[in-house]
Image (cartoon, rainbow, N blue to C red):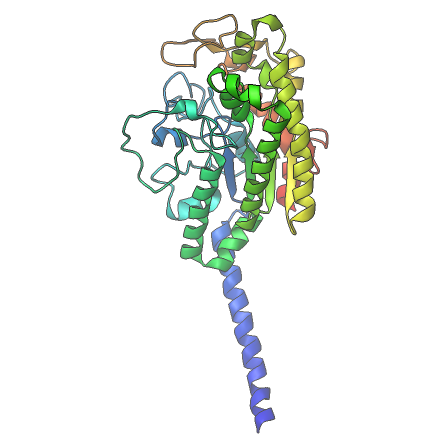
Length: 391
């Protein structure tokens, strides 16, 4: 009798398991979206901020003209360029069918996050003290949700906190199986480190005392140690396909050219040396994490190499000016004053590598994005982003 009852239960148990599997597959399909494209979660600084700083108390903002003059609608959105950021263009090239919304936008709630979220913040860095020059004491009516804001920017720790909130909401709305399936198939893009040099180690108010006691190797070591913790935390929160962009040739931006006049018409050497030293350590870190975190696919995007090539061979890439800002308000290279309503700007933005003292133009961002998407191993290692999302 016992055997007979057990025998009856087996097909019923198998049927129930099949039903649960089917329901899980349907839930995952519903969360992933009908087009099958992966969700994209973006972390970073002003190079990829899509408007998060519009909603926080900060002196680092880009939600005023002429920023956005070549963006859809020709209006500023909080992007620190004349048009699209690198991740905007990556999304378009991958066929995502729209821009990933900023986390701080009150409309980025519910199923709006199913295609991904942008957590990036102008002025943010790997280290929590980075960007504290952007502190403002003015009250803001925009802080509509509980977040961690440090000195008027969202550093990477805070951005990951906000991603953890999004993950929790996804699980609450769609269940853990579907939410984890979405996240583990999603693309995660992290662009961090430039501000840790520009707005920290190289900023006079900080750098004079800090550089007297902390040599470059020690500072970079602290950055790498912190970054290891942060990227590992993303993995523990179900990130698996993670693209890590290195620090570009920051000594070549108009601001550094302006503040290092002894370099003449060349790029400032010391900032680029810092970036190269950090990038060597970062490449080793990305390889280490990919080898030690089971199921992870870490990709190293060599933005330094790509952008250096654009600057060195700018005419062959269709540009006419590679050392000065299109949007300028003084200085030899237009690098003294941030782009704003009183600034002048060039008539043809597609001919300038730099939009303002710090950031590439839409045209330069497009070249960088396409080489990250489809480039060879010298540009992006071990696979390009198109191959990563198909894996």
